[in-house]
Image (cartoon, rainbow, N blue to C red; front, side, top):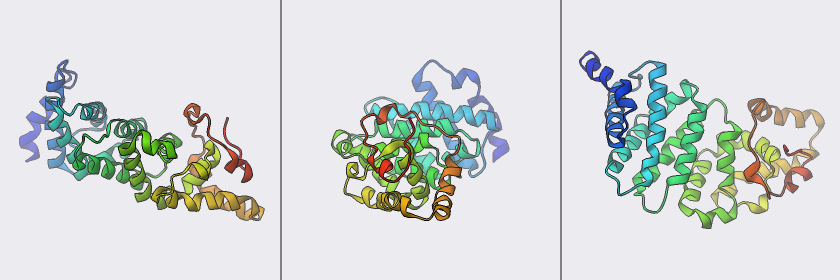
Length: 259
């Protein structure tokens, strides 16, 4: 079957089609490529460089999910559904497309709304959860938008987006725990600003650990933070959007928030 598809596969990734000026044409091409990815799964249908270009186009076209009445909306929903079902999003981890993963998370959080059917919400939740669960390391660039979502005011400002990120954090609470403890100290988040929901419950252990951190013996304190610190070593985060966040939790725990 793969040999039969080769001429079509080659034609679909030509620069003329991938970079076509007409949006409907690009979405149609991407829809065909996504179907081919479904047929060849779990193997990638193209080499690494072509797959990176395909994923760049995919993330860019996810923006069209915000245009529910557009001609290409149904096709983009289908693409999203296939990416979730065949787990092709995990290929981005293998290809080390970290920036694209962060962009995808940001896009989902930005465009999800009450106008979308549950299937769209569910596919986004599935993709985000899978990516976190299968990641070897969780960067602060990926984690910080998720932490931003648990502020109380965001539940009323963007309730559907808040719900999406709440679900993802809850689904991945165990995986995120060691990273959250370090992120709390790095960014500066107080437990009073966390919504008293499943998100708050999922993070309760983190804040408890931070609050008790200063009372641990020195050796034990170093051991308990080494895992998260090693994973986050060398990473940085733009803290501009954290302005106004009280860092009392970190100060009381003896941690220093990054400037």
